[in-house]
Image (tube, rainbow, N blue to C red):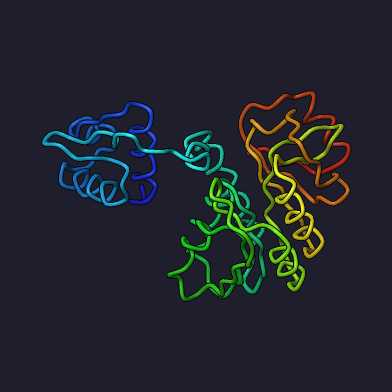
Length: 251
């Protein structure tokens, strides 16, 4: 298991249980106590925990933003979706990574690629890729939304329109037969529309929780989508009906 993957899983455990023991984590991950202590040192540096002699506790009065909460949900699904999405990428591609927890998992896997260009409106995605000299990274301007680290607004839309994108990996708040793809924020909707307009291929990456949901603003019909990559237990009736309009790959 990668160090980053193990630390993400430790975060999930701490956010759920509020406290952990080194011995408990050693047993779960089959690593030494020195390794776990280094992991907890890093989480303490990030401000998530306070270490004690036998382990660590969740830091008091910590504010957990919505994006962090989403990272805790459907993690295995998102990792499977990300791995499948990477099969669509080839050397020389220009790809756009939308903001979101699933696209962040794609970014983590993209670190192993060479000679690709990534455009994103997500600060956490950009941070994940920033130290890779083999990736040409471009970040849109705009106003920062602190709840999900995305850039939105006129400057964002204007910036996105300058790029010719080979593949857009698009996130969504909901997928329904009646309303298509939806999001809870009108400014995010405008940014997503700009991404879709600039992209040659649009691939939606969405875990099972998004199916059958309708958020406030519709931003895309299935006519504009090449494929949906998903995982987990979805409403089978919705999936079968959607297959009449768009390719769906369940991993």
